[in-house]
Image 1 (cartoon, each protein chain N blue to C red):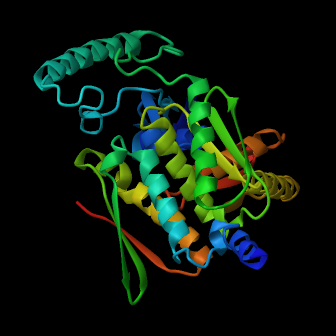
Image 2: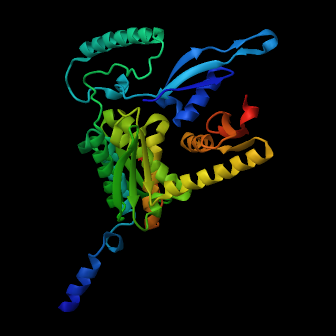
Image 3: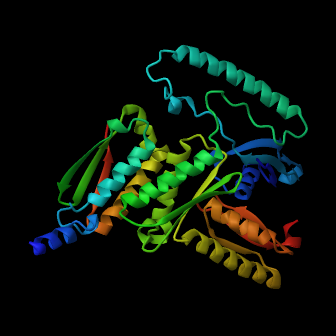
Length: 273
Length: 102
């Protein structure tokens, strides 16, 4: 799982920048504060805050949610609570150790033995069956394809004609399909996994359109030397903008504002520093 | 005799065009399916239908332990279910409300 490192005038700002880079919501990320911001005389900034962040890896569900799923009716509540306390002690010690180590890069957090990580093949199978079942329930026809785009990204695609019902106005229905797929397929156990669903190539066309538009704006910024602010966008779209601008020399990106009004600025590179 | 046979075949051809199929049947199928994929105890799912002036009202009951799963953080999952059920109902020309009840 890749770590990103970002800076900002405050820790909050640095965290927001990291979330943009990762393209996830706050709840799905894990942070380490590398340096707090320090202010100098007259409120001038002496040192920017620096944080490290990554998409949070799979981890046992919080207590309230995992209840007694596997051993329903078993009376071992106390025993388990004890085990949990012990294991969280252990993980605290882990964290301390990690904090002292210079680069805790790929160290995965300890996992409870009873919460095995779902194998990629199983995730694919579950998503496949979720999507084809959904298409059936709607009385529609479509082919479903599922694969991993990369280690952290599971994508399902439904293809066919007359699938507009599953996309909805401005993709709202598709967004709901994706939320439900995530919940039903990963069952709360897939924290480090991005799950995407596309229907009729809608997301792909949208992503391509956003890339094209971003390139146009970046060209404009290059030729005028003036920063341009994009409209507010959700994290995955902002990631597309950041990634696209990063492939172009002479321009870079910043983000500003709070969710859900957070937006990306495309700025000339020399003005950024 | 052959006439009758032909008519039966036509009528049974596709669920959506079946005149005996209730309006909103697709919405109920979708609701049943989605709730089923989310819960641990599918046998405990109960869905009741009620017609009121504004349309079809669907009430969903699940096992107490599964309630959190169908509601989700800040009602996010419940709203996603509503979005899909309404899309299915709109196709049938019906308006639908979905309630999750204890």
